[in-house]
Length: 365
Image 1 (cartoon, one colour):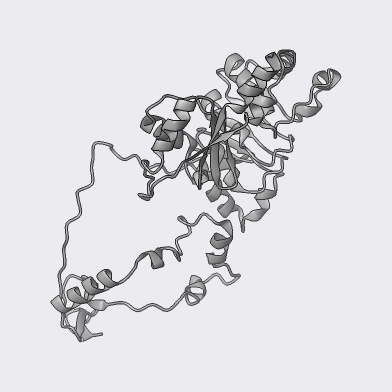
Image 2: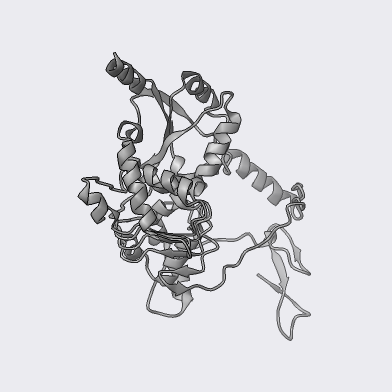
């Protein structure tokens, strides 16, 4: 009967899936869902699968309430966030939870590796720790149950942790580590060197940390950038306050502090110039679908696909940027839309002041 009860509890789970959830910060996403859900819930085993964000809940009323949250949350691009909820078996970290004896041995091992004076925890090559191997305990940090157990011990025993070394653990994804922002929020130094991380996207799963020092050397992702400046820029997108990368000092980050009390003035419709041109612009806006232009955006900061980002970058041995500019698509400009200090225009002709000694005269364009 006990076995039947356990099996029944294992089936009373619900999987919550957010398509394209990988582009959202975990803390923002979960806070948004919690605030819009009518029933409080505890998310279990939050992780990413490809471009989706997933977690589990065990309470049926919470699962039903989560269904109602779908399409009620808007992201920064004013897009509605979809949420799917389905019956599921118990998550991996629950079904394969470490036994009490294994947890105790892991805690003793981590205590030996903790430097009290520096508040640093060295977990490099943890799987092959002699104490764990001697008791046939296999701790593979790529497995979410092992990483969850490790973070649970950190939260309970090392709440002031400042430095975490996960070097040489064959990590190829950071799904299990995403909870570190809640379990060890004070971490300033993170060593992920000599692992198997292939994409900088993985770092987005821990970007909630306010890191000052990060080690990534020895990961395949380091060779995916054209040069050092592109590498530093991509990593700083995740960790703006980063001061050292792979042991190298970085220039001080530029942080713009905007007074939250200042609010932007609302935009007002304004047009100066020919009524004929105004009519043409309005006609274009009414008849055109601007989404066709946005989907082919050349803005590298907006694009998430690293292949498209590299494709749009212009690089050459020639130091003159004009060579790269000449390769861009040819554009045409409506000169009547350009405002200068003194000008006159008609629909067919535009006059601008000539620069230099003859600035008093007007030159037709």
